[in-house]
Picture (cartoon, rainbow, N blue to C red):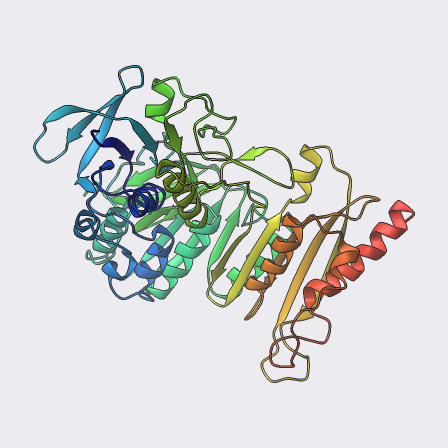
Length: 463
């Protein structure tokens, strides 16, 4: 029998994890694998780009987990700088454009994996394409930004404006600060880090101000001004202009599903592909999708969400590769866990914010506590704030947000496990967490918040 052909669109986390896992399960005689990647790099950590730009990671290649040559050594026909421009599901083939030669050709498939990722949000405003305005989605983007930072500055000023105050925005603000720039962050929202409730976002704002980063909330960008040389000179907002030698866009990303939409594949409310638990595209037997181009089930809210994270993408790829290769795997969903930092401030969240709970019709109580990451008497104890949401009456944990210094962010993992297990805040108070003065107070901050949430549930729910 002739080998089946698997075609993979996208050569980063989800796509190449799927290809690699399928290859582990089936050899070249049983499964031919052809993968297309439109960029210069494959299997790299986009999440590490801010730390490469800042200088914390010395070399670009340190972010690359596996090179094209390494994939090819495993009998994966990986075609770089080749973009899939057409998808013919009825004919079971894809059209590819070689960006180097300009040649366009069709390749047939028996099984298809769509891992086209996400694209940065880039508003259609005047000047957004001017030299000096940068997104940071790919390694190519990161290199272009570094090249721009090395360009001669106008006069002695080195001013960076970051548009957006989400994860990428605050991480790039830190990177620019470490590069010696005066940094201004322009944020449309009430507070930075809209993935947090505003009261927790305010803590981030205060910390950023203390680091010397100017954060402007409620700043809707209207355009980019340029100088006589055509380069960016300022970011214009409804409230005024902010001088800039370089602009970094950290507004967020959206699923790259242009091919899928044109082919008539099912998309969710956030524009991502819809799949079943095996990551098979809904209604299509031999088509799978994973990574930043799909929507995932929020296990707490019971709705699909678009969450662009490498952790999810790699898991999706493992599940897809197992199923394509004749094994079995499922991806049940997520609880929405994420961590970040700006300098020494750690930021974490999992589950629902207050507005998320209201949007799905859940009544809730909140508890906010202040504690430290170590026993208060132990040297180096630093403050942290923990906010917890629990369902009214039942006490089911709904979400946790943490802002603090060393040792704060990874505490959210305890809450992520509790959310996945469907625990109540009262059950959480009995968790047997590790304790020693260098690592935690006797009552870990997450458990202190759980105790306070239990009291709120009892008071408001009559339990």
